[in-house]
Every structure is written in structure tokens, then in C-alpha cells.
Image (cartoon, rainbow, N blue to C red; front, top):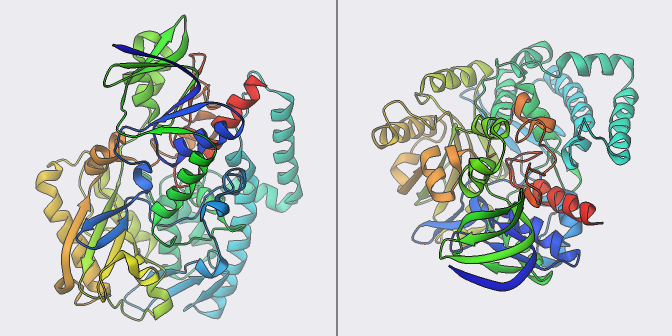
Length: 524
């Protein structure tokens, strides 16, 4: 075992976007920071990768809808090449055999393709959803309060939330509490009548979760989505030029400018614990590196159970970590197409947007049902983008890239994914053929990543992009586990900064920034 005499203020494990954000924020505060990435390049599941000769695509996440404004500001990402313009926002197109319905602007500021009565019902519901998501929003952008040991700042934060609730007015406040843990199906049924719109919203509420629209608390998923923003507008979404890798490149550049030392192909084998405190790491090749703080931006279970080892922390904490639910339900499809597909009834602007196959809330529920029993959906629901239409550099001239997130694909498929994958791909292609006739004949190459593939390729246990289900019992003060939601762990000097921490997954950078702020505040 070789030892490095160089001591660091902080060692960050994992070069996904949260790891890069945490490292950059710590370095900007004057600390000497080393980031260790197991793979040969940083970015994790937010990289832009070539999947067929000349065809590049955003690896897992393919739309930007919640990059935290504090991350953009603190790291000065605009100076590092990240541009967010209103013109880059993409519409959401609900595909249906009855013709499409389109949410334009920032999450349906304008709704087209629906009846006038549905448009006004949607306007009312949208305003209400944004008001309610606004109450939860401050919670998602800062460290959750430590209920047993609240600081003055946390008391003030809770007070501000109470005030935001009070500002809603008596009627709205009652309604907020009434619907908070409701399922999204019932709420949509109360206020809307168009199945296409209800299907789209039901899909958005359950995307990336092991929930159907009728599952209790499924409405929380919609709030989580609408609490995100891009360019100051809640619910807005965009396809970054150059794919998600362009966002990572800006964060990477900010980290390097701040003075972070980044080492790729440096896998951490263990966290060194002395007298109940994390004091450094040992890499796979036997190098010992010491630091005042160890920040893990990888999965919390991997961190505690594999790198630290259950012997170093109390059994109650270990049990909680073992019980984090993190089996993914979403697959990722990449198609290299000879030419751009034509989705029936969708105009040119719609093709550059986000196309959703979820024709009704019942369809989404039926797609969810088999996953409860370890089977994939024969009629999957999905979110499709055609990124090369907005950025031709992603595909050869005249050709096209299709990127889709597909549900429901249970991590532990009963028949195993080796046997199941060709069948699932067939079911997906049949759905695509219904809405874009002739697409199958133009496929040059198809890559389908099941949750098992995502686990292996991106080191995400369970293949879950949130590193743990984003459900009521695994959110806010219970994320990653109850009693430890503030980025600290039972070991002094060890902090958690990945998607498994509060507020959760998606390309937000919030867990990384919040964890860095926590460390800075403790030292101060």
C-alpha cells in the first residue's frame, strides 16, 4: 500500500454532476479538493455518448428541467459555456390516435389541441399546481431541518414555509393539505376531462418511480417536477445543445477553474475510518489519500455498506441503509435512424420537443401493473426526444437520433433481461410504429438499456437514476434515511452528496451544492 504525503481538505468520491458541483463549490471556498472518478470520464449518467458510428446521445437523462439556479450562479456556469434561453424551451406533445395535444412554453403556459373548456380548466389547475409546488420548493433547495437539533436558520426556514402556506389563503391552504398525499389520478379526474392531457400529467407524476397514477402519494412526483426550473421558469425544460454532456462540460470546466484536482480511472476501494471519523480513502490500486472531509457523491448504500463497511457504523443505521428502495423501473432506448421520423399530426416544432406516449391515465396505470409482479409492460409508456433535430452534430447528415425513456421495466425481471430484452424492444417498437408509421424500417441501430444495464454501466445500484425511490417515505427529512437527511452521516468527516441525498435525482446539482455548503458552514 503506498501512501501519499499530500493531504487534502476534501476528497470527493464520484465525478457525476453532483460530485463535480460539490468539488467546485468547496474549491471556490478556498479548500484544496481532490475528485476521484472510477470511470475514464466524468459526468456519470449525464454524459453525451456515441452509441453507433456518428450517432451521439445523452446517456440517461436527456432533458434539462431542474438545474438549480444557485448552482448556475455559484459556479458561474454561463462563463463556462452553459446557455439557457427561452427560445430553447421545448413543448410537451401528448401523442394520441385522436391527434396530439401540446403544452407550449414553460409546462403548458399555452395549451393547444384541446377544447376551450379544457384550456381554461388546465389554466386553473396549472396555476394551482405551481402555487403548491412553490410551497415545497424552498424545502428542495436547502438542507432539510434537523428536527431534534434545529438551528436558528432552520427554524427561520420552517417559519418561511409556514408563511408561504399562510399566504396561499384559507381555501388554498386547506386544499394544499387535502391533496398533498393524494394520488394524481383522482386529482386529474376532479379537474380535467381530456384523457390526453390527463395521461401526460399522470406520466410526468410517475416517471422514474415505482408508482402508478392510482398509487397513493403519486401527486408528489408532479410537485417535484414543477418545483424544478430552468431560466427562472418553473416546469420549463430544454434539450441542451451538445446533449447533457454540454452541461457536464460547463460544470467540469468550473471545477477545474476553481482548482479541483480531478483523477479519472481512480476507483475508491475503501473509506479509512479512525476513531469513528472518516480521514481519507484507499484507491483500488492501493494508494492512501488523507483528507479532513470525505464527500461521497455516489450511491449512499454503496458508500456505507461497501466503502465504509457495516462494522464501522451502528446496526440501526446499517439496517435503514439496507432498506432504501432503489430498484429502477425505467429503461433508456437509443435509435440511430436513416431519416427523421414523422409522428402523425405533429408539426416541425413538436418534433423538436418532448413527445409522450401515455394516451390516458388508465393506459399509464395498465402499463404499471405488470411491473409489480416482475414483468415489463406490453404497451409501455415513454418520453421521446429527437435531439439531432435541434443539434445536427449528434447524427450524420440526413440521419436522426431518437432518445426515449421507457416505463415500466422492472429491474428484477422475472424471466431475466437476457431473455426479456428482445421482447421488450419489440413491444416498444410496436408502440412507436403506431404513432410514427414506418419508423421501424429506418432503424440502423438500436441500443436498449434496461435498469440492469444502467446499473452496470453507470455504477447505479438497482439502475435507479434517483439512487433511491423518490416517494413520501424517502423524501425530505427521510432522504436517504430518517434521521440523516442533512448530508452528514454517523461518521464525522463523511458526507453524502449524490442523488440519493435530499432533494433527489435529476440534473439539479442541488445535493452536491447543499452538501458543500453544509461542510463550509461546519468549518465556519
